Each structure stands twice: as C-alpha cells, then as structure tokens.
Length: 533
Ligand code: XUL
Image 1 (cartoon, rainbow, N blue to C red):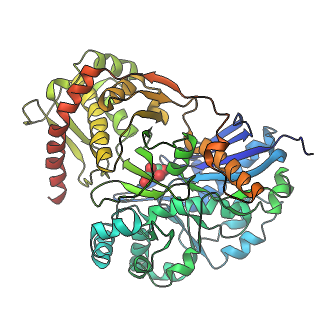
Image 2 (image 1 turned 30 degrees about the horizontal axis):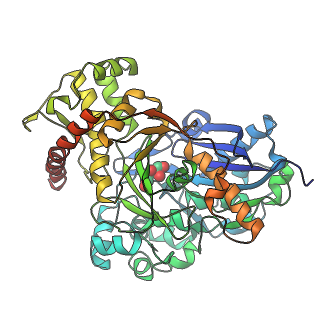
Image 3 (image 1 turned 60 degrees about the horizontal axis):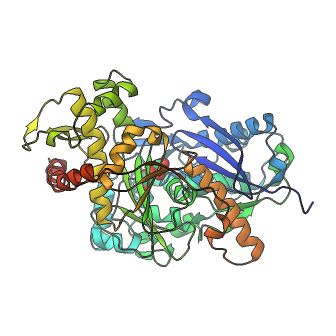
C-alpha cells in the first residue's frame, strides 16, 4: 500500500453551489464536480443560492446538507477515486451562520450509511434559514456593538475589522434580540465553513482562525474569542461557539458512514475548513506581500498576504492567514461585482459581452473624465446602503445618463479605481496581480485592471481558486500531521506550474488613471455621504 496514490479532496460551499476538486500529491487535479443550488436543488426555491427579503438575505441550512448528499452521489456515480482520498478540507462562503439545536450533536454522531444525510438531519436546526454574507440587516447591532467596544477603530484593532453588517457577531446579536427563543434553543453556532466538516466528522467541527476572523468576535492577534466582544453580543456565547483552531489542524476523522456508503478509506483526515477567500489565497499561492489577488465573482474581492496587521476602521478586513499561522491577510470586499457588470451589459450592450468589449475598445482610456458609481446592491466598500446609480461628467457635474460606451467603461474603470484606492489604504503595494473568479476570462476587463494598477496580471489555469485552495490545504494539513510539525506551505507548492501572464500595463494609461484617482476619491466620498440621507 506504501506506493499507492494519495489524493486530497477540497470542497467549496459557495453562495451558489457546492464543488469538489481532488488533487494528487503533485498538485494535479484528477477530478472535479460541481452542483448548483438553484438548478440542482430547485425544491429549496433559492435564487443565486439565497432567499432575499430586503436587507435580509438567508439560505436554507438544510439545502447545504442535501447538496452534500447530491455531490457525493454524483462522485460515486462517476467512479471518482474516493478510496484513495487521504484528507479532506474545504471552503465555505464567509460569515454565514448555521444554528444547531440540542438534537444535532447526537444525530451527527449516529449518522447511518443506509440513508442520505438530509433524511437524518432535517430536524437539527434551531433556525431553518442561515443568515449569509449578503445580509445587511444588522445596522443597529453593528452600531450598538461598536459603542460597547469603544468605537469602530477599537473593534477593528481587536477583531481585524470594524463592525460589518454581514459579520457573524452582529448577526448573532440580532438573532438574540429578535428571536430569543431560537437563541436559547441553539446548542451550537457553526459557520458554513465549520458546518460542512461537522457533517463529515459526525460532530461539531471547530471554527478555524482564518474564517473566525470574519465574525467581529475573535481577537485577531491571539486567535481566541475576545471576551469583551462576546459579552456585548449574547449571553453564553462562548459555549455555543466552541474552540478555534489553526487552519492547518486536523478537526477529526471522516465518519464511518461515509466509508460504508461511498467507499472512502477508514481513516481519512478532515482538516479544518476555512472561508472561501482565505482558501483562494491558498489556491493562488500568495506568499509575497507584493502579490495581490483580485477575485471577480458575485462579490469582487481583493486580498493579499501581509506580514503584520494594521486594521482600519474605514475599510477592509484583516484575517488570520490560512497557511501561515503567524501572518495575516487583508481583504476588501465589494458586493457590486459580476451582477452589476451584467446589469450594465444588459442595459448598454444588448446583453452581449462581445458588444461590451467593442464599446469599451471604441471609448477612450479614462472615459473623458466620466466616472460612475453603480450601486445595485448595498455596497460594503465603501459602505453605501442606499442603492442607485450616480454618474458624473468630466467636470464633476452629476448627469442622468451616459452613452452606452461610457457606462460600459465607467463600470470597469470605477471598480478598479476603487480597489486601487482602498487597497492602498490597507497596505497593498502590488507588483503582480492574480486574477481569478468567473469574470477573469474577460480580457477587456483584465486590460483595465492592469492599466489602473500599473501591474502585470496573471491568471491561474483554473478560475476556481477556493476549491483548489481547499484541496491544497487538505494536502498541507495532512503533511503537517504526518511530520508532526508545521510544514511551510511553500514546500507543498514546490511542484506547481507558474501562472500565465495575460496583461502588461500600459504606462500612459496607468499615468492617466493615477491622475484620475484623487477625483475618483472625492466623488466617491460625495456618493458615500448619501448613505446618511
Ligand atoms: C467576504 C464576503 C464574500 C463571501 C462570498 O467577506 O463576504 O466574499 O465570502 O462567498
């Protein structure tokens, strides 16, 4: 058995679906499969994987259980090499919370191989719908918790971020206030990233430090729950949250029912799962503070490796680093990502990306000074709750309309100018950008990215860095376990192929964007003011 192939499985539970990637020790992908919640599990009635009701956005918790059943069935039907999997890790959409009742622990422990998980676990939830990261309904709790903890900067210094609506501590405070009975009936609060491994190990898996950083509850330097943050949230919270572990740690062994039902080996290690953005940092192999990644998806995120943490009350997040326990990562998150780009494509380019690219090509770099803010969903960076479109001409005068080409260019340029502006404030000094996510195949978008930042852009061969990063982390955690000591993540990556460069910045275009940046900042501040109206 010693020379038998060893495989590592990464699962990615994103907003829209569940995906798996299996790699070998040389980091080759040997199997992939994905399911989409809306398409493959229509009985849960989600749109984009969620149920939205104004500022409140949730997903049915049981849908994630059903998704795991379905994905595993499909893997079995494909004859995926499950028997060779040595370790599993995973990604979850960040911040979402799963509320488990008193029955949950026993039901998880006693999982049976002859039934799907969904049939066994339908009644383990104290709250059926999990608040997810798109929820912005906790403004009152954010304000109250910031007051209790000494202000926004104090919360950022303690937890890595000021209080954000989607961060789990604020969500928990809201549930405690509005549904005290449900709170009392909750034995355990999991993140999406600790819930999926809980299903796998048949018990409550701990939260990892990197995803734990997205809760406004963890002391970002000590990587333990911050007592003051717990105290101003809800009573008895520490017991409901359980411990925090480093991201490379093993959280348990795969429950025997999975071996019986799907043919996994008997001793598969389950390594702590983490958030999708931390896993993307692993999947994109960011190890140098000059590297940043821009992930273009439903939400756009910008993140990079940082040696030290300088949390800011005005923008961005500092998380514990998922592959280097003493380091950090910084991240900016935008809610108006692909859906907003698609909205302008539909409005101004007849629904065609090809027409969009032609319109972009035909319009001048810098858009003749026209700048637009397209807030289709309440924005996170900078915080703008009031949705709307604000267009300014070259003189800074607000106008009602742009030409279609101006709208197309204004969306792309505005998104990257914002990332450059706010990225500078969290300490990014990019020499190299890795683009990832669905929209990273759009070369006209990538061109604008390279020119705005004045840095070359690379793409990973595969655009799903969260799932791949989870598989890398399964291998990493397994290696740490095998050697009995922390193994630097770079050693795991030694055999990885270099990323492909897809854009070189144009110096003249970059100079133009640099000149435009301060005007962009002023207009953005003006638009952000409207939040108070
Ligand atoms: C990050 C965030 C989103 C989700 C998307 O803070 O809220 O990027 O992680 O899954």
